[in-house]
Image (cartoon, rainbow, N blue to C red):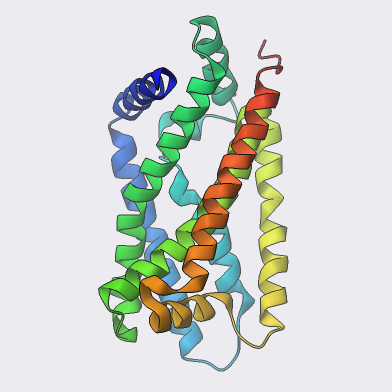
Length: 237
């Protein structure tokens, strides 16, 4: 409980340092949500299944777990994440508290960014599909589950590597997402059409929504525990 309270103090401190992060994050989510909606509209107007639609979604959804602050823009040149961890260790703040805080920040970011991302997506596309509120929420939570899972890997790279290596590892996710989208393309459909259909048919009882959420939360938790074990022994000098 004490670590949770310390983590919450740390989270509030980080979230209040850069007021503009709320604006930049909202603008980026509105842009990406709108672009996703436009791509879905284009896909629905043609019989050709474009794997770029799924690839774009798969790459962009995990970005909901980040707030676009000064640290996130400077992590390559200043290695800002490593500097932050080194500072916390000197104070000292336990690694467990830092990890709890990072998870809290991710969940807050998903909640905040999701309002703008899925709101823009609804305005551009989902409202034409006749989504009820429960179907819309099911679609959002299904996508969020996937985003949570991938966020675990981003945290792993962020906490255990230098800024330049973290960038390299992050870019490797792009061909992975493209490969997944091509595999889905071979099924004769595209992934987000499947998610939309399942969300409309099942609503909040949709099996894929619950599987996605459980897998996302469990994956985030397990990867974070692995990251924490390695972080304790990482040289931050």
